[in-house]
Length: 89
Image (cartoon, rainbow, N blue to C red; front, side, top):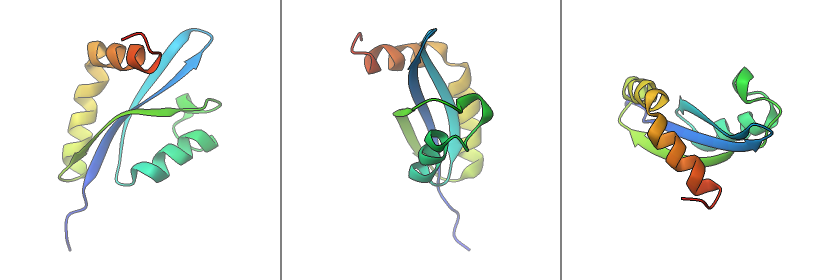
């Protein structure tokens, strides 16, 4: 059975507190973004309209999960992506 590629992604959304980002991983990027926007994604993403800010395709699920862990801690990248999405960066 072939190894299925994984994706790590950053989505963003403007709200009352400013611009919020969320980092996750998936094997189907389009379906995952649709689930976030339908309110059936992660609990912390419900009730908002999200836009894809950044995505990377990785060799497999394990690599995607590992990269997700790193991106969740990369506040500088998330800040730059949020500013760019708002037209400020």
